[in-house]
Image 1 (cartoon, rainbow, N blue to C red):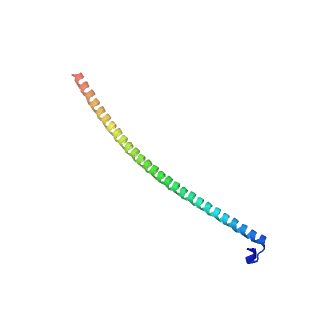
Image 2 (image 1 turned 30 degrees about the horizontal axis):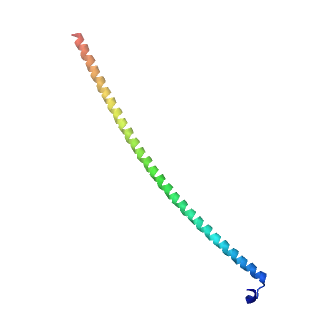
Image 3 (image 1 turned 135 degrees about the horizontal axis):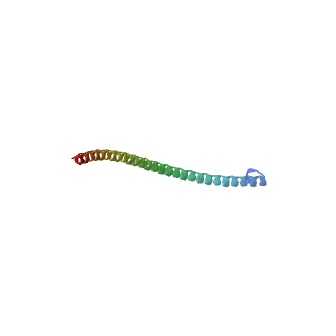
Length: 106
């Protein structure tokens, strides 16, 4: 190179070394960028998976809340029925007691 281009020999070696170093550095940087891109893609996939799982969990929570509400409504209805039956029982007992008293007076 020094003969062809008229560049001093040690200058030529420095330029070649710099080119090799730059080439090696560029290759290393390209590999690093590729690796980082892959990591980003994996993180995006994990994020999407996490969001999907979170959505599914929220759907299940909503379903359980609807079930709880439905069961609470059924409990309220049964409590109302029990209260109504208890009133009927008290009315019947009162009628029975009145009848027994009338019969006792005879």
